[in-house]
Amino acid sequence: APLAPFDPTDPDLMAERVPHEELLALRRTAPVSFVRQGVEARGGFPDHEGFWALSRHADVAAVSKNQADFSTRETGVIMRFAPEMTKEEREASGFLLINHDAPDHTKLRQIVSRAFTPRAINALHDNLKDRAQKIVAEAIEKGEGDFVEEVAAELPLQAIAELLGVPQEDRGKLFTWSNQMMSYDDPEVEGDQMVAFAEILAYSMALADERRRHPQDDIVTKLVSADVDGRGLTDDEFGFFMILLAVAGNETTRNAITWGMHAYLTNPEQWELFRAERPRTATDEIIRWATPVTAFQRTALRDVVVGGQAIPAGERVGLLYASANFDEDVFVDPFTFNILRDPNPHQAFGGHGAHYCIGANLARLEVDLMFNAIADTGVAIELRGEPKRLRSGWLNGVKEMQVAYRR
Ligand code: HEM
Image 1 (cartoon, protein in one colour):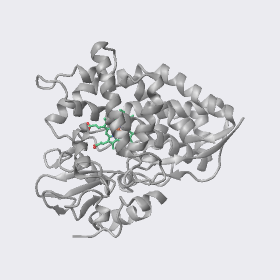
Image 2 (spheres, helix red, strand yellow):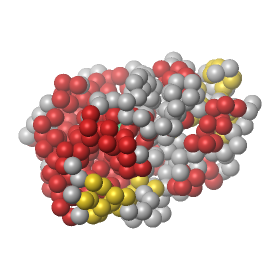
Image 3 (cartoon, rainbow, N blue to C red):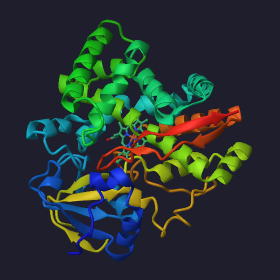
């Protein structure tokens, strides 16, 4: 079998950059290849010598849609855990919605799916637009600052907290827990992942008790009153639902907004175009360009063939979204940031299978409102130094991006 000459989930590499050149070479020479990992690099999968890297758009799409042959239950979607995590700690992630297969997955997803329909998300439009404008006005008022914390992070946090039903005064804590849970591979980020887990679980349980007594029109109430085959959710199922929504709502769109701003600042003609014409296609180009989740995995349930390569039952398969979204067989000039790109069949939200991102409509609305709010002010933005990247094997994360605003 062809061997990949590098590991696309290596956090040291990802802390520097998304390895686009290497991925391009992989697509051309060995589109389905095995990434052999040493014990250290296996990041919580000691029994697996590595994983199959799918670098082509078509193969990522095919496996994402193939629930019969590929599971998220077996090893979960996260490709790398902190090496020091215990087996029990890793296995707890099995409670996450995303790590269930049908039919359980279908039933669990149904509990919350109505909160994310286009109609439900549109109902948030005016409130989020208001918030976006206030966030931008406050940042500009300061003259300069960290775009990540002051601008990009704020709208996703407020939106997911609103949907869940987390009161305003607790939203800062939700944000901190979510960051700490997702930065387990970054020694520079303060806080302990397991402490954050314990705290968000305890907080969620208390909120659940409150909603059982006083139901509201929010996701926490939907979860505590859910009926799955005649029973309610267990505490673990409920708590990990909260964790997934908090993390997915916070750690992804923020990076899309930050990398989108960075793309505009380094391609000023695209910013001029956006300001003048506000093309609807800009949002998906930003999300493709950023690809905030660079890879998730599946496990083969039986011997299968993908892209001409035999993959044995039980092996891990990496869906390299960051490669698929720059596949020259699908995208014209993939390395050009082009906000008029249409069509734009990127797989940043997954490959249209059963796990396709439930928050895609919300994320698109957030990105759209944020850039329109910035463009409406007419402010000029200047980059002050390079963005600081998160050390993570699978998130295209950015911790800080200093900018200055000029009226
Ligand atoms: C699933 C990316 C925003 C909630 C996913 C998947 C990806 C993804 C790649 C897995 C798809 C698959 O396995 O086929 C993103 C990106 C976002 C974003 C790039 C922002 C630009 C959000 C938001 C929420 C959210 C705002 C808010 C709730 C979820 C959930 C799942 C999911 C709950 C699991 C769905 C399931 O297993 O059925 N997302 N996401 N995401 N996303 Fe997002």
